[in-house]
Image 1 (tube, rainbow, N blue to C red):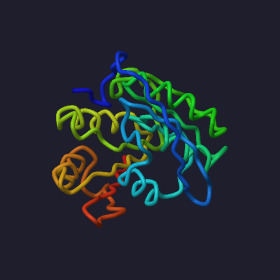
Image 2: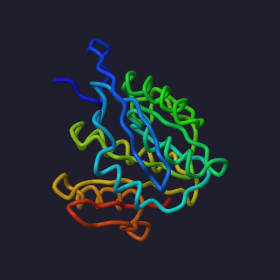
Image 3: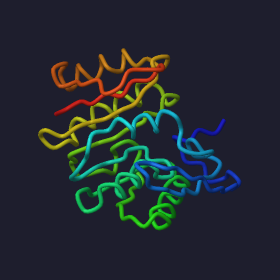
Length: 197
C-alpha cells in the first residue's frame, strides 16, 4: 500500500492539472499519483482555507503535498507573508516546486519528516493532518509545532469529527492550554481549530 505521507520513488507518474479558485483568484496545480488529493483541492483543505484569518509573517505549510495551501497564501498575501512548505514525500515536493513557478509565487521548500529538518520558528503553522499516519505521528507534530512557533504564533488545523476532532482538540489543549484554543469552524462533520502560543 502506498501512502502519500511516505516517499515512494518507484511509483509510475500520471501527472494531471487541476484548477482552483480562491478569493476570485484562479490557481492551476500539477498533481500526480502518490500525493494527497491528486484529483484537486480536497474538501477539508477548502474549508481550512475559507476559515483562516488574514495572515502575515513567517508561515509554514507542513505536509504541503503539491503545495496548494502555501501557494494560495503566498499569492493572496504577497509581500506580507513569507511561506515555507515542507513534506516527507519527494514527489510532492517536486510538484510543489513546479506549482510555485506555475503560479508565480515564491516559497522555501524543505524535505522534512515532521519537523526533523526544520530549524526556523514561525508566526503561523498550518496543517491538514495525515490521519492515516496514526495519532503517535500526528501528536508528535503537534508538540513540535508548539516549539516552532514564535510567541503569539498560531497553529491552524482542520480535522473531521469522525477522525477524532475532539480527542485531537483535547491533546492540543494539553499542549497549548485550553484558553489558547479557538474554534474557527464546526459544521458538516469538520472542525477548524486555531491554537495560539
